[in-house]
Image (cartoon, rainbow, N blue to C red):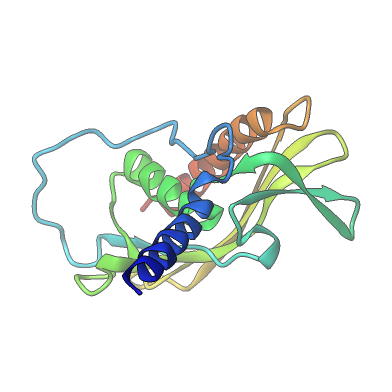
Length: 194
């Protein structure tokens, strides 16, 4: 009976390792900000000077770690071996927050710090974060909404950047999307300056 138990346990453990032996992607893609805030001693923040940058809403096509390629108006494919470290909405939110800190000097909070003093809120939709097959172009479109600013109405604006990438593959796509995302983030940061 004991031998049967040990054989069953060994078989079960061997099944657990099957998922660990799947082929890993050659590399994982991420976004890196062109501009970062400088280190400082910190200090007190005036009420209302804070900006909370929310993770943008996304369509299902980009709510994944795979990279879509728009083929015309109604079809999508995915770039082979192109895998994001985490979903693009979260990567873009952090890039946007870092860029706003660097370009505007505002105190920027993550949504998980919302209870401290949310101040104004930058939310929005990341409408496109993909590659357009026509012209092999990386496309980033972000529709932003800025609300909660003292004595200011709610403001909205759409930002868009397109970057040529040459051949459609994981390496070219990640570099072109990083450039496009940084352009959109810089434009949005200048827009939210007080």
